[in-house]
Length: 221
Image 1: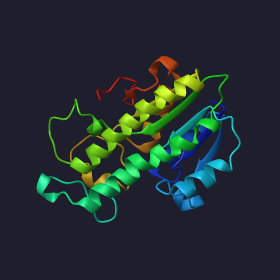
Image 2: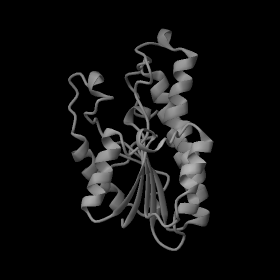
Image 3: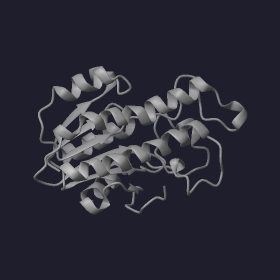
């Protein structure tokens, strides 16, 4: 991957991905809200920032998202659901990447392999949900997975060498997740980034529309 665009490059995983790609020799364009004012939930902002870029990215990776938004953490029970908290989860974790995908196709080459990936989460898997809870976050990530699936079908018609996928980075120790880790084993952002880059390198157009974990194994929808 010689030319990469990382959206959400100021976050723990996004920054680690950008740095790892640069160390491998890739040219990396970093975009984030903190450094550049990119607001993925605002289409005008997405259109302006992506519209200012020249086409030809071998990889576009959307590393935005959040488990806790403002004061709203993940719910432990249905009784804790609120409309504002659920709407915020969908805005950041589904609508944001969907707006990025709307404006990404012109940046991807049509005559060679290309990758688009968005960070999802295993808890967004409907088939793998045996614990319940975290309803808004789970639902938003499940919706993101469907967006990826739809986008893969459409991109396949115009970009035959493209792979459009959702990725589960594993449980990553960042400032945003540390209070929810509990006794779950976690990995540093740098380790997660190396694993995801390896997965991306092995993708083919036949994988487009899929949902994969940090080891390249398919995750059920």
